[in-house]
Length: 316
Ligand code: ATP
Image (tube, rainbow, N blue to C red; front, side, top):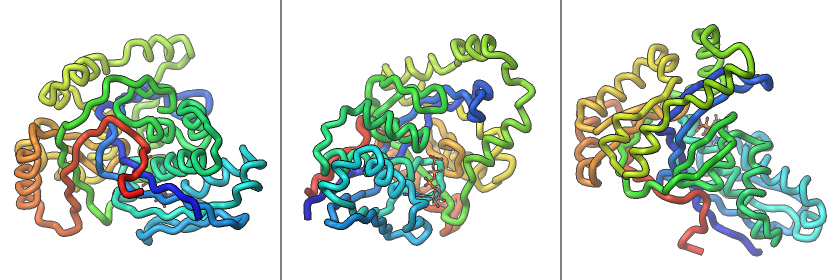
C-alpha cells in the first residue's frame, strides 16, 4: 500500500497578545508562532477500504473520530469525494513525542500532517495556501502548523504572514505529565477577568489591532538576536494560568534562575520554554532545572527552532 511518513513539528508562541472579543465568539489575537524540532511522526497509508482509521502509541490520545487527525481525513473525503472513492480510505499512525494538551498544538500539527499526506496520496496538487484554508475550518492553529517556520498570526490565529525563519535557537521545554490546561478555560477565564478592557466596537478593535506591541519581537527575530527575543517574550494568558497552576510558575522561575535568557509559557500552557544561547547552554539549563525540581512528573526536553512545518520524514 502506498503511504507517506510525515514529520509534524510542535509550535511555541513567542508572543501572544489578546486584543479583544470577536463577533464569532473567538478572541482577536496577535501572535508570533514558531516551529520547534520536537515533533510527532504521522504515517498516512492508503488502506484500500472505505474507512479512515487512527492509531496512536500514546493512550491519552483518542483513537476515534474525536482525534483531530481523523477529522482532517474526514474533511478531505468530504471535500474531494471523487478522489476518496478512487483512492479509498487511509490508516493514520501517530507516533507521539509532543506532550498532549500542553499548548504546543500537538493535535493541530497531526491534522496538518494528514491534510498534507492525503494531498500527496490522492494526487490533488493543492497549494500550501489551499491546504491552510482547509485546515482553518478545523482549527485556528492548523494553518500555521502546515506552513511552520516563524509567522505572525492574527485574527483567531489563522491569518498568517510568514517572517524570516528563525532556526537554531536552542530551547529547554518543560511540561508536567499529569498537568493539563484546557484552552477554552484559559480564554474564558481571561475574558471574565479582563473582558471589561476589550474594545467595545469594531472601530476601536481595529485601532487596537493596528497598535499591537509585537514590533520589537519581530525586529529581534529578524536580527536572530536570542537575548532580545528573550526580553520581548509576552503571553497574556500567563495572567490567568500562572496564579491557578503554581507548578507552571515554579517551572518558569526555575528556567530563569537556571540561566535561561528568558522563559515563558507557550499558548495556554502548561508547557514552559526557556531560550538558551547554545546547545551546551541548553543542556546545562536543563540539568539545573532538573536539580531544582526533581519531580519525575516533570518532562524536560532540549529542542531548537526550525524554519519549516509539515515535511517528509527522512526515513521514507
Ligand atoms: P493547542 O496548543 O492547539 O491548544 P494543545 O497542544 O494544548 O493544543 P493537544 O495536544 O492538541 O493540545 O490536545 C488537546 C486535546 O485534544 C487532548 O486532550 C486530546 O484528547 C485531544 N486530541 C485530539 N486529537 C489529538 C491528537 N492527534 N493529538 C493530541 N491530542 C489530540
